[in-house]
Image (cartoon, rainbow, N blue to C red; front, side, top):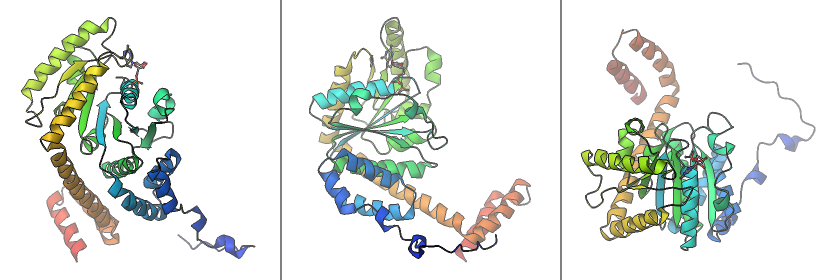
Length: 346
Ligand code: GDP
């Protein structure tokens, strides 16, 4: 590419690449977050989600300030196929939690928004009642391009919400791709929503997700579907018996609910409370969070190492050639990887 000719500017200061005035005042943002100001919290999350290098520096500074104030919430992950009733359920549960005296933050990971701007979540009016409540904060987040990316921004958003005084954090994810693995690895309690249905419905659920769940709810158990929901409940219970339980002290319950008609929500609240008490008493929550921190430490090292490796100009060049050699069976993938690694180290 040829060098661009510099166009002379009438005002020489306009071409100065400093954009200091755009840089948010971190102390000011922190003060706002501590005071529970949702506009400040919202701006802070935007900063964390930004890809600009300058914003990244500001975000890091802010997270450092917020970190000592974080960790005190109960974090719940909620997953299920599109249309199963996640937002209806979260709204109903959120309102109950607020009525019980909590402050609720909902972070909804939107898997479609990184691909096109018209996202699944953005198209519907979601959680109106909860969004407008002064004790709640609802925020859709773009899923980003990679698991590492979602994980970092969501984990940092949790820290910000906790620093702002939200003591119940709900992370919603559509059961697409790997986002539920990421969400499971950053929450204390993982909830799976299913629709009443026959065996086909169950088979559509990835086995791994059932294994991750701390509670399974068959939603839309109202009207004609109530009887089918009860049958589904027994089927899921049977399926769960075959799976090894994730924790020895907790067997994931299966319940039927109607998020729309607000049926059995008190049962759900009681189960969550019971889990919280038991897990706190047995040290399970602390262990889980330690394991999660270790997991994310390793994940982010992997992520950064991989980026660092592939951004190396020599690797970029060799990779193309070696990949085509691997594809045409001239060399094995292992030999190619060895050679690339030697190039990198040297
Ligand atoms: P999401 O895509 O999983 O967030 O699902 P939504 O919460 O947007 O719900 C999808 C549709 O199912 C909406 O039309 C809801 O009104 C409806 N719905 C949600 N929960 C229930 C329920 O418990 N019973 C019935 N009958 N409909 C429900």
